[in-house]
Length: 112
Image (cartoon, rainbow, N blue to C red):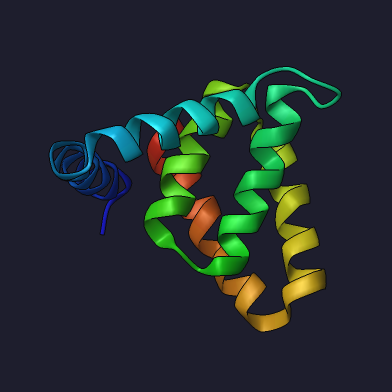
């Protein structure tokens, strides 16, 4: 599935959840935004940590969504490649697969 298709699917799913459980979703999004704010870690550093975590969980939609956020935070292809080496170190073969997926989706989202 293409990156834009995954993002659209997540957006539609989020809209459905917002209709079904609006108060929970508002709290969830508020929490997510608060966590990503500047603190001891920059938003860019946090985006890389989040991206690594969702890659370990093997959630393709999560990887694409958080890759988009990482790009918006200024993550470069070189930084993503370094993250991929860490994924492969800690996650072995599955980390290799997640890394290949992330680099492919980086090309799609960044027009690289």
